[in-house]
Image (cartoon, rainbow, N blue to C red; front, side, top):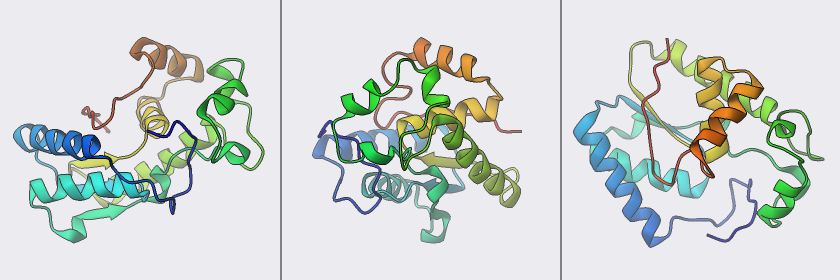
Length: 178
C-alpha cells in the first residue's frame, strides 16, 4: 500500500500480488457459502479487479457484474493524493468526520446518503436477489450503518468495536437488507 489518500477512480492503483491472492481466497469462501446473483462494485481499478476475480470464480455472466459510482471511496477533496495521516489529522474525532467536510470533498454523512441511494436503487431493481458489493472501507462502513439505520454516534461505536479497519482487505460479511 502507498499510504496516500486516493479517491480518483482513474488512478493507476491496481491490486498487488497479495491483493489478488486475497481476492481469490474470498472468492472461494463466497462460492462455498453463498449464491450470488449480481456483483456491484466501485469503479476504481483495484475494486474492479477484485470484482472480476470473484465473478470469474462464481461463473457470473459479465452483465451481472456492474460498476456503481455510488460505491466509490469517500471524496477527501483537498487531501486527495496526500498522506492518509493528513486526512485523519484534519478531524479531532471520528464523529467529526460525519459533520466536517474537507474543501472539495464530502463527509461521512454525505457518503452515507450516497451509498444509501445506490443501495435502494439496487434493491428496487433486484428484489430477493443476492448482491455482492465490492467497495472500500469507509464506503462499506456507511453501507452497513445506513442499512441498519444507526445514528452517527452508534456508527462510531461500531467502527471502534471493530478496530482500525471496518473490514479487512477482501473480507466480507452478510448484511440482510429488508
